Image (cartoon, rainbow over all chains, first blue to last red):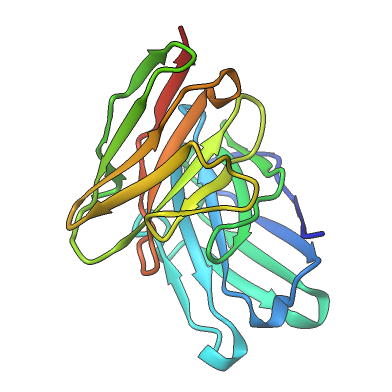
Length: 116
Length: 106
């Protein structure tokens, strides 16, 4: 059974940093292209970032809205993917989900609230 | 460019009624995914590669489309189909989502 467990979400002030973790099991993580997707309080889904597998040189891609502020990374030995979020803005407030491509499985998400 | 247009935004259907939701891609030559989300739960992949049903999805659902116009159809609405449906451009960045269609039971 595929499991995805996102952690690390919290209330944080604008301008601060936060790191999210997604621990996975039940599939061959090392071969998977992993994504972070977020859902705003208005329920809009937004793709955030992707990291490809080692065979693709761990290539990374970002939505324009987070480019330069967020960094996606992975640890294949721990079957985990991470999202380092810097210079957070109020509009980054959302539930953050990790999902392996092609988006067939979703975790329960972790809530990030950016507010002063 | 951040959100794919979907229509309608909301709709209500009676059991047995046919339902069609449309989505417009920002470019042609793509595949479309559809995700179903019920209140308080995570999204679920429902249709992938434009027309393939995800595991466990009833065959009253179908997906179609080409170019920049795509659709999700429910042949006969059932109570359990009430949910929000999101389209999503697949297979290359950015994996843009639609604005969502909230389907309610009439």
